[in-house]
Image 1 (cartoon, rainbow, N blue to C red):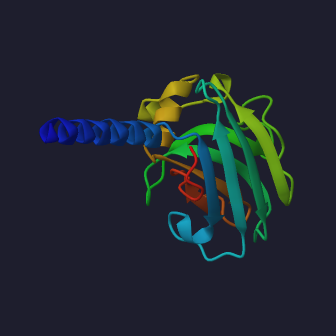
Image 2 (cartoon, rainbow, N blue to C red; image 1 turned 180 degrees about the vertical axis):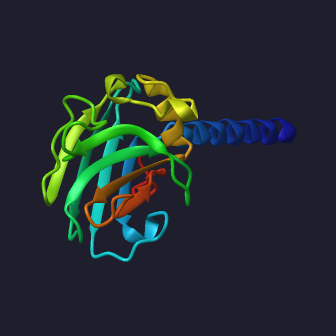
Image 3 (cartoon, rainbow, N blue to C red; image 1 turned 60 degrees about the vertical axis):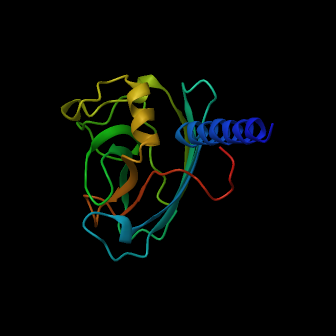
Length: 179
């Protein structure tokens, strides 16, 4: 009888651990702080920002808010890139742009306010690649997998720092324990 209780308790722990691991892999909340110290290469700037987002239960859209202030240059554009920590990568999603025409900015991309916040919804139509890194335009599932694997980052480019003034790797939001 004692063996049966021990076996049952062990099985319950294994199942609970597997469910927790699945939930961790399937996280839905994002909360990041953007600074120059997270840029590649590192930038000393007064700029700061935050990126909060939630992935819907179906995994078909991401609702986000990007806030920023104190940039040393005028904001030119903001994106989600496909790239690992401490490295750079291609653009997956345009969040906003103030680039003059002609530019690579997709039609319908919202303008970036000088300071403040933007919000929006990312769906498959917003995914532009990067095709050179294996993510095709429209491949939302691949973008979502990259986000959940910690292989994407959000950054803001400015006139003073064209390659990026502030950045944060997108990682699991473990601040509130909810997914």
